[in-house]
Image 1 (tube, rainbow, N blue to C red):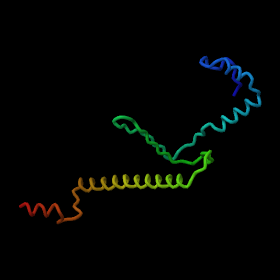
Image 2: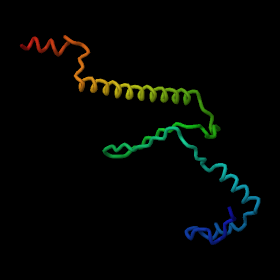
Image 3: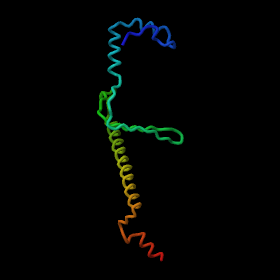
Length: 136
């Protein structure tokens, strides 16, 4: 990166910004470049990258599911308390149970509809046939 000049400063900023830019030493500019490069998001291909939008009557929500290598900085500015860890664990377990329930229900519904479409009767002589006998 090259050191910005006064002409690089947008017109919406006042003259003090260009004065500050002109007073930055090369060492300071190198330190700023290094900091920006360290904090810039590093792209990482994800194994799973699912994104979709859910429209609700009054608002829209977006859902994102990504699975890939974790490259985040693990340090935090504040300590994590036991209650926060407990809440995060509870939310993760609840999310996993909910996802399991939805996936299981979808699989069972698909199997049931396939069975019904193929007219496979797994329990002959069961409820539907008994009702037909009694109605005659």
